[in-house]
Length: 482
Image (cartoon, rainbow, N blue to C red; front, top):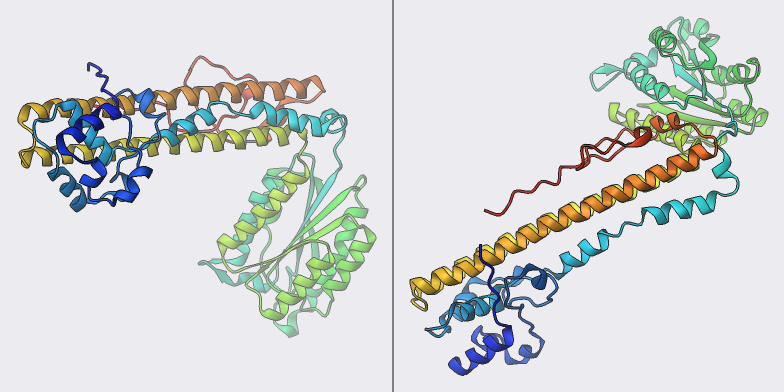
């Protein structure tokens, strides 16, 4: 397609005023007092000039008005040249693309290195050197209610079945340094008051405090079957024994209680939590309550507060998943080091920049398409009004087509170029984080716990060191304007 450079708006405006005796604004029916504030778009098909211009047509975008537009078209004099028709149509309908160029320019200078340097500066001289520093041991004890209350239904399944599933997923995501234990309470007798005696003294250690082993843990968890009353206070009391009797069980302790109700055996869960917290101030008690009555809610909420933790009441499967997801996130944050924190920060910034880039391209492309439709409809109206002949309709249409093609091609190229810079800078700074971590004695295997995100970069030959995670997004291949 041959590119044409159209004369500037000032020349077109001067010519038109000689022919018509009035400006485009007054032709369009706008009050004269607004003419001083009106800046029409540059009359050009050169995309690089168009995107740097802040002019906008009188009826562009949200100001589009068919009746007023056609009234303005009726005032067009006959015998205008194609360039003059093109300039007049832009004065009415031309869009402003400067904001997109400004956003592209802003995005092509990513600040990932600045993020790395900032976090590195904050970490030195201690946190950056924690690559070989032993982490504080963390112990997790899960108390699961195995009383008859857990036979109740939620979302078409028993509370016990849903709890087992959620606990399995939670335990599988625990940091590798964490030791875990599983205690079941109330798994004998009956929930009937007269038959609760056996269950009120029943607290079983189904999984001893130790490193997580998926097969053994799942087997222990699957053995939980709802039966008797709820000896919650006793279970909390015996949890202290799980910590104290295990050699090396020192450090921060976290207790996660999943219960279908409060204690039904005459115990005081709040008092036992206070005693446990006094025994080890680093013990945190979190409680998830399944479909509880108001009294049980109040009791378990007080117990969680006494244990420095959180009480989460849930009424369905989704709520249960969200509760464990929240607790897992807290554990991840607790175990986060400089390495993971920096990579996460850079990844989040990279993801945000890519989202903004996608939105910028898509929005500009949509605006180009809208402008083209409005301009061509107006050109057709001029032909039907017999303001222009077929030759002028065709010649002006060629200018509109060239504008549309050049703007879409420009947007596509900017999208590709800026995206490539984001990718290159992202990879470079991830490599720098890896280098610093290894330099200080860290292991790159740690990276596997940080992110599960994957993507294919534009260059298929680019091999990322250390299996660096990449953010998924659509390929930068955009259909050429037709």
